Length: 522
Image (tube, rainbow, N blue to C red; front, side, top):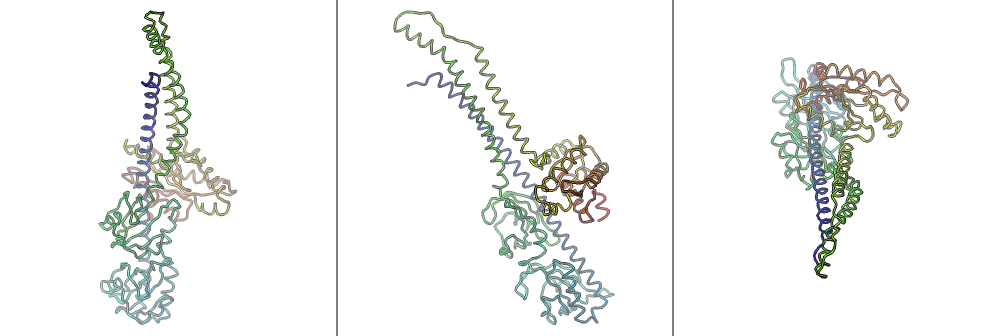
């Protein structure tokens, strides 16, 4: 049995719709996945750089603390009693907080004083290679990880004690126990996310210095391409299968001082999950329009085929009767135009839905502000067009206390309250974004950083002077930086503004710090 014209027209029309819809959905789905992957890689790289900088700053601060103590001991080491030295070692453990133990030696490496938990080492020789290097070369050192006499996996930070002539008369050094609570837990442990993201640290030989699973600390990882890049001294980002054969999106950064590497990574499946949800929603929202289009096609296909069916029936009858009858095919053209209009209207509505979904994916649902994806896109356009702009990152001070004291619902009210303040303050001169959590970003095109700093400070004063939804004022700290005056590309601009924000936090909160001010204070 041959297919009828009506069924053929229906098959062609429905197949065209299905293929067009499938290709559009697939193209949108792949584009969204690629954008998500790129943004996740950029975010993880920037995050790894920030954590590497924080870790290196900690070690530099620890070296300065030890160096200061060494200078104090330089005048009294020869005649100091063990009680005094023990007290100084114990004071450093308490003051530095992250040092697990502290020892003081003479120039032969004999241990003269210690903190309380290693008091049994007094009178014994120092065996640590880093400490011996400090004594022989007279410079501060950070050792490679090694197994101590107590069986612990440690790193040792040491500073020389010198007399007035510059001769080394001893050293003071502190240990960090890698498999116990330590500074890396404090610096990096708080950055674990429930979406599967986590951070780990390796030394120059590929040994895990920090990992969420403490049982893996001390393990050597050699089959990981990220660690291979770090061992070459490179920083960057990539998609990879890790040592556990998990598909990951990783950013990695080198710590120059120690030659360690910090890796921030997120499972690819989790990073791209939102694109699958968007695809499902697009399909569901499109089904009514597809069904409507199918009915329209069915009707008009019947109308188109009807004249030809009448004509074929008439011809058949004529052949059988060997005669002729009046021909009335019922052909028409106005209805064909209406079919085209109906299909065009359906696709227009479908495209509007697609545009709506794209808009929703760029908007923060809680505050109604644009999200980080929209920020990255806007910054890309401005950089490509060579438009100078100023970026402000602001963070609510002690927001955790708001959530802990008044509950997360009130915390959400505070976020919406600040969002309204931002929109009212910025108006038409800039754009506001929710950067994540309690962090917000303001982007000012064609505005210098001085003016942006003034605008932000006015906003800060306005917010701090009004009662928030929790019944008391809130404050925020902010960092300000400009392209191209302070940075050449957007990632560096983000990092620089973030450093200014952290400087504002560290120097008292409730203030606005721009890049030149931070550099001047540092």
